[in-house]
Amino acid sequence: MSSLSVDLSGKIAIVTGASQGIGRVCAVELGRSGATVICVARNAEKLNETVNEITEAGGTAEAISCDVSDRESVESVVDGAKEKYDNIDILVNNAGITRDTLMPAMEDDDWDAVITTNLRGAFLFARACSRYMMRARTGRIINMSSVSGIKGNAGQTNYSASKAGLIGMSKSLSCELARRGVTVNCIAPGFIETEMTAVLGEAIIDAAKQNIPARKLGQPIDVANCVLFLASDAAAYITGQTLAVDGGMTA
Image 1: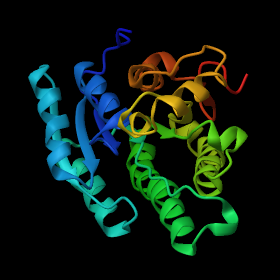
Image 2 (image 1 turned 180 degrees about the vertical axis):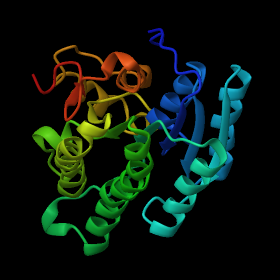
Image 3 (image 1 turned 180 degrees about the horizontal axis):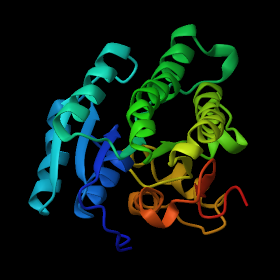
Image 4 (image 1 turned 135 degrees about the vertical axis):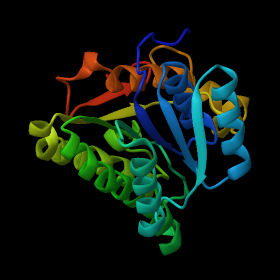
C-alpha cells in the first residue's frame, strides 16, 4: 500500500514511540509529507534510525530521548520544540507498552507500568501541547488507542483499560479544544504486522487471522495513512472520533 498524499509543509509534529513499529512509520510518513518531525522515545539508537530514514527521504527530523511518563521530561520536550520552531501543529501520542497476563495473576507493577506509560504519558504530552495549540488556534492531537480499548481482550485488562481511557480522554478534550480550532481524535489499530507481532509465531498469527473478517494482518502504513489524514486540513471538521483500523474486527 502506498502512502496518502497530503501536504504538511511547514508543520511541526511530535511523535512519541517513534523508534519502531507503527510510531516509526507514522513519523517517516509525516516527514515525507513535509512536516518537521520530533521523534520521541527512550531508545536513542533506534530513534536515530528513524531520523535517518526521514532525512534520507528528504525530510527534516530530530530525535529526543524521553520518558513519556515523566512530567518534567515531557514539558522540556514540548517547551523546547515551541522555542525552537515557534509552533507545534501535530501531536501523535503513540508510545505504549504491554504487560500481559490474566488479571488474577497481574502484579501491581504490571498495572501501573502500562497505565503510566500508555495513558499518563499521552495526558502529559496532550496537556503540554494543547496549551500552545489553543493560543495558536490550530492543532491536531492524534491518540493511538487499540481495538482492545473498544472490545477488550483476555489477558490485557491493563492495556485495554489504558486504551479505553485514551478514547474517553480524547472525547472530553475534543470538547474543550474545538472552539480553538484544535481537533482531538483516536486511531484504534487492530492486529498490525510489526516487530511485536512477529515474535508471536505462525500458529498464533494464523489463529488471529481467523478472527479478522479481512483474513489478514494490517500494515503500519494503514495506520500511518489515517494519521496523515487526521493531521491534514481535510480533517479539520472531524474531532472526538475513534477510527478503527482493524480489517473489520470491531464491525
